[in-house]
Amino acid sequence: MNQSLSPARAAALFIVVVLAWGINWSVTKSLVEVVPPLWTASIRSWVALIALLVILRASGNLIIPRIADVPVVLSVALLHMTFFSTLVAAGLRYLPASKGVVLGYTTPLWVALAAGAARTERLGALKLVASRRGSPASA
Image 1: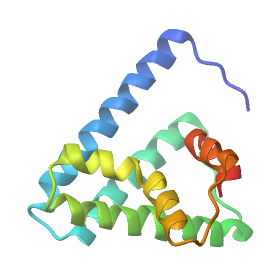
Image 2: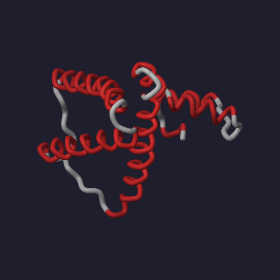
Image 3: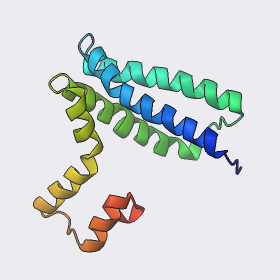
Image 4: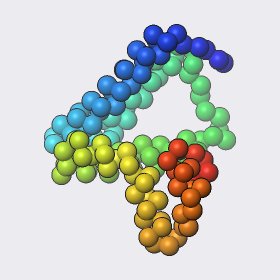
């Protein structure tokens, strides 16, 4: 399904995403001061699940994963959505949201540097360029 967006609508959606992503860190910082990090990640995930279900259902784009896709969906849900979100929430207990954003979104760079320092991965020029572009070649 190839649906084109008008430039105005694409810009409006871009602004919504940027604002939501930015506000998300401040909300998490406020939430983690009241509830533990795991509950913070849980609350954020449930709100996101409900919002996405409503949006995807209303737009006719809701797709239920096949049974064969469940291991991939669960691994992403557990490793990224649960583990990463819980670590972010735990970190935001001790850091301002602005520093948390920088550390959170530069995680791939820190992992690449740690892998090179631990000598578990050779970081050639091609891998360094690929990791900056988010290419699958960096994996």
